[in-house]
Picture (spheres, rainbow, N blue to C red):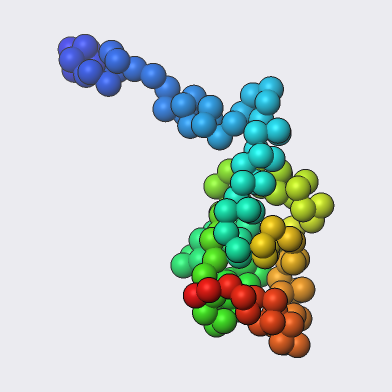
Amino acid sequence: MDHHNHNPFVIAGGNPQTDSRGESGEGPGSPASALERVRRMVSSADIFLFMKGEPARPMCGFSANTVAILESLGVPFVSFDVLSDEAVRQAAKEHASWPTFPQLWVRGELIGGNDIVTEMHQTGELQGLLGGVAP
């Protein structure tokens, strides 16, 4: 009992889960704020990838394949792990009208998922599309 009375974290308190939920945009305005975050992310880089996991540790084979293709082309890209934020995950599906991940965006335009990226890479179309992106 005496131990708890001297713990400044218990006294100063605050629920860390509440704070992190608030930052992720839960509440009445969350769909709109998450959608706005998605729009900002997509426009933040020439090549943006919504994926499961991170480039160094993809959490699904489709995301891993798309990352491998982008890395093989040597183009810089920014990614976001949709498993880390459910509100953003749902908003990204809505914004793209695309239900699955990964989602590759180039200059603000949705290119598609792993199947489309793989096909475009095999035909050389992806290399042409990404040609203007500086490494």
